[in-house]
Picture 1 (cartoon, one colour):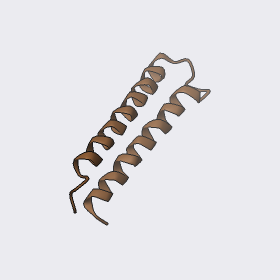
Picture 2: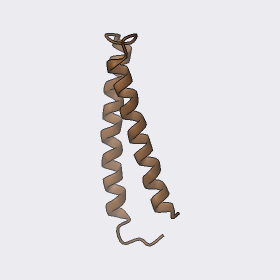
Picture 3: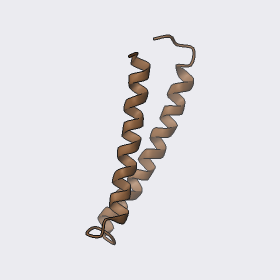
Picture 4: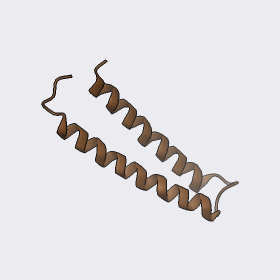
Length: 67
């Protein structure tokens, strides 16, 4: 497993975890409507978008790199 592939897997896992936690913040009945969880959910969505942008940047930067 190359370092580049490992980096891609870790970033994908971070995006997935961020979106799962955002889903929990918005749809869990015990936390629904709580301002803190709503802010955390929105923050997780922004973090997921930021990680997607980083992944695109990383793939473009390492397109020709053989690792």
